[in-house]
Structure formats: C-alpha cells, structure tokens
Amino acid sequence: MFDQKSFVRLLPTIGRWVLGLPVILFGLMDLFHPMPSPPDMPALAKQFADALAASGYMMPLIGIVLAGSGVLLVINRFVPLALLLLAPFWVNSLLFHAFLAPSGLPMVAIFVALELYLAWAYRDTFAAVLHAKNTPESA
Image (tube, rainbow, N blue to C red; front, side, top):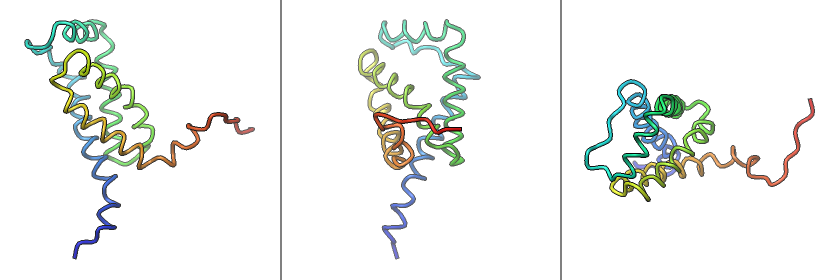
C-alpha cells in the first residue's frame, strides 16, 4: 500500500541527490577537464566564459565549491551550508543564461527550483539569518 506521508518525507532526500550528483559531476569537470566554450555559443557569453577560464583561478574555485557542496548534499552533512555555497553559483548561472546564452535557461531553471525547494525544506535552519536584527551570543 502506498503511504503518501512516507513519500513526502523522502522528497528532500530525493532533491538532495538529484541536485547533488550533477553538481559533483560539474565540479569535477571544472577541476579536471575544463570544457571549452561550444562553437555556437553567443559572442558575449563566450567572452565571459573565456575570461573566467583565463583568470586561472575561477574555474578551479567553482569546481571545488560545486564538488564539495554536491558531496555535502549527497552525504546529508551540512546541507544548509552547501545550499548557501551553491546559491551564488545558481544566481549567476540563471542570469548568465537569461542574458547571454538563453539556450541553457531551462536546465538552469530546474536546478534553481531544486535549490529553492531544498532551502524551503530546511527553512527552520535559515530562520536566524533572516532576522533583521540579531545580537551575538556572549562568550
């Protein structure tokens, strides 16, 4: 018999895996086998991607953050930290594809939706960050 309540409890786990595994793959590719820009990429998008690669540090940094965050998602450790580390990447990816290379927008939108769903699933963890005024704890 199908227990809907049990399935709903599995959704964050499924979301972590569906987001985490590709992110690990993308991160490892950035670290060990950077892909050249596709020949049909729009000129401004190609310039932007080539500039990141030419910096010498940005693609390895992105690869480390992606792979590390993906591993944290898959092993279910420090998930809110992984989501925070991934958020700037997804915002930049969304804007990159919205303004420079629209063909990749649907895929990025799926990953952004997964990120937002997981942030919502872990919303209690982020509650203190969203308070307008916090005071530090005394030592």
